[in-house]
Length: 303
Image (cartoon, rainbow, N blue to C red):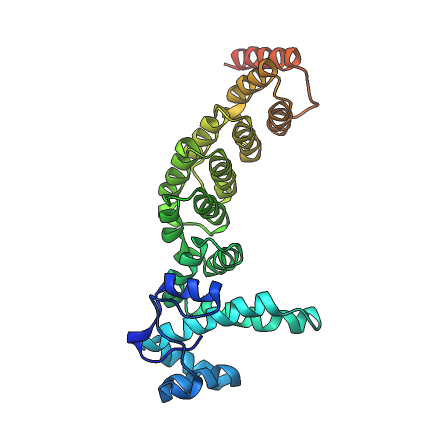
C-alpha cells in the first residue's frame, strides 16, 4: 500500500482497515502505483530495499520530514504485517528477516510509528493487535502513556491487551506509582474478570520496577478479595512473588475463604504463596492457623 502526497495519507484507522481488507477504504485514498509516487517517496522506498548506509541516511532525513516519515511508517507497517502473515517457505532465518527488519525500523521511528502501533493494539484483528503490541513492547518507555489510555477502552479485549502490555514495558521511573494506580483501578473496578486478572498479573510483573512496594502490596491484597476466584488467585500468586511478609495475614484470610467456599484452585494458589513467604511445607488450615499463632507469640517475646 503506497501512497502519494500527505493529503492522501491514511490515518491509523484507515490503514488498519486497508491492511485487513487488502484494499483501499471509503475513508482513505485510492492505491497508487510506485511510478505515481513523488520522486522523494520513490527514492525512500528504494533506499529501504537497498539497505545499508543509503537507507540509514534516508531514515535520518525522513525523521526530520513528518510527511515522509509517516509515509515510510505506513509502508513499513504493511511490510511487517505481510511478511508475518505470508512467509511460509525457507529457513526460519530467511523467513523472519523481512519481518524483523521492518519491525526494527518501526522501533527506530517510534515518534511516528507509535500512534499507529497502539491503534493496531485496539483493532479487531488479532494478528494486527499482536504485532502492534509486540512492536510497542520493543519501543519501550514511550509506549507507557498510550497503553495506560487503552485501559479505558470500551472493548474488554483491548483493555486486556493493554494490561498485558503494561506488564511487559520497562520502568516508568517517577511515574511508576501512577502506573501502579492505573492498573490497580483496572484490577479492582473493571467489569470483566479476565481484564481484572490480567491487570493483577501486570501488577505482579511491575514488582521489579517498584522500590516502594506498599502500594503494590495493597493492590494485590485487594485482588485477593475479588468476587471471582481466578482474580483472587492471581492476587495471591502476586503476593507470594512480591516477597513482603506483611501480606501473610491477608493470605491466611484468603486461605480460609478458599476452604469455606471449596475453591481448590484458590486454595492451591494461596498455599503456594504462603510457602513462598513463610517457608516450610504446605499445611492444612489448622496447621496454618497454629503457625500464625506461633509467629505472633514469637513476635511478642522478641519485643
